[in-house]
Amino acid sequence: MSDTYQALPGQPTSLWLATTPTTDLPALQAGLTVDVAIVGGGIAGLTAATLLKAQGKRVAVLEADRIVEGVTGYTTAKVTSLHTLIYDYLIEHFGEEKARAYGNANQTAIELIASLVKDKAIDCDFIRTEAYTYTDAESDLDRIRAEVKAAQKLDLPATFVEETPLPFPVKGAIRFSNQAQFHPRKYLLALARDIPGDGCYIFERTTVTDVADGDPCVVTTEQGKLSAHAVIIASHYPFNDKTLFAPRLTPHRSYVLAMQLNEPVMRGMFITPDSAHTLRSQPTEDGDLLLVGGEGHKAGQGGDTVARYQRIEAWARENFKVQAVKYRWSTQDNGTLDRVPYVGRYTPISHNVYVATGFGGWGMTNSTAAAMILCDLIVESENPWAELYDPNRVNLTSVPALVKKGVDVAKHFVIDRLSESTPAELEPGEGKIVRTEAGDLAMYKAEDGAVTALSPACTHMGCFVQWNPAEKSWDCPCHGSRFATDGRVIQGPAVKDLEQIDVNKQGVVQ
Image (cartoon, rainbow, N blue to C red; front, side, top):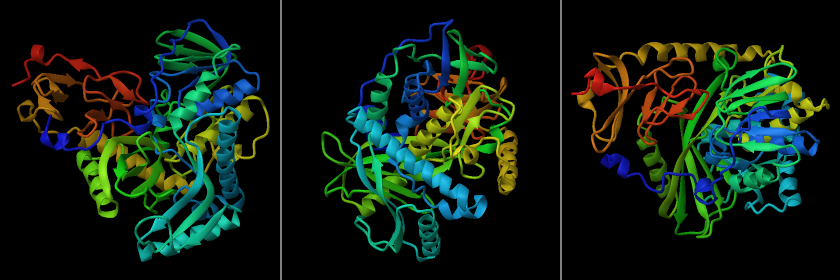
């Protein structure tokens, strides 16, 4: 392992995964019929299953790996309707009525989580707290004041403050009162325990490869087929999409360090207007930890991801009395063209297939709101937020972003194929796209010198993957799929592994 990688602090896993048990649920029983099949075992899927079961529906959650070990297992878990700076933007681009709907959806999501925690007596470190978007730059104050004015206009719990619980001065901040935080896996594993039974199921290690709309719908998996009257695709990124959502979603990665301090950890959740730094506390058996995040970038375009962790640590040590870094992890979510998630019918002509995606880094409340919207649509009940979140909405303000996304993808189709590296340049613990007599290969050299070579073309839409040195993974810069060093899919939308190439047989390793 390289010296740079060894220098990274903390255990390479999320705090949430490290402090909860693993699950071991069965794979799909082929031939089953249910009312609703839900693809994805994160917060959106499990919350939807909980709500639908309460409505008397027979549900089956289908998870490709283990539940709550995907995107939700790597969140920072802020349960808040303060989404950096969004309400002034929403009023300008959507109008006051729809901006109010967004705020109401996310505020209601907080209360649904709180009620489920109370009603089910879930021990998940749930506490009420405040959320802040703060700045130490005079140039940001006008934006923050405009956000306060917009949020107050929408009857959200917003105030402008010049002092916060942070141990350093700020120029100003917007504060939302009566928000919340929790341990997401403790919460969701408790929900998951109550789902199986009465015709309801959770299936793990069940990779869905196709969904056919109809009455009933047919869900095809590697373990066989399942029939359902309705299907929800809540797999973070729609796994079966090639054209509809790919141009309208931008996968984004960021990084988190969980730190033990030599001083009391302040209460509250904090983020800067540009999301450069995000902070919150979390209780553990060994005392409170401070979660420090940031260094975001488009997925697959992070460059030296090791340096991103190092910059977060350096910033934290400048501002806090850091004793030790306990955990480190990275997280990924999709942004939409107009900053509002896509929740509703999969296409304008879909009858019984629904989707929930594009939570923009605010998945705790947006996913919960999505589950409420989808439950209402499936049971044919009115929902006040469905029009705003409709995946098939037309919004002309998003056209420039759509063009920019298309240019970015086209660039990676061309430029990423211009590698001039050779196999001989590989260092132990390193991966590169290399040019060989057998063509371009995604090649990784282990510490013992063993080389694994893969086709570099992402199995989703063919973009060349890029090496992520901090996570030791191959990441797609176009749509965010991620693959292990052996080519195995570790994050969609891809469902097929990268093809392995026998380099010894090809004679391309020097």
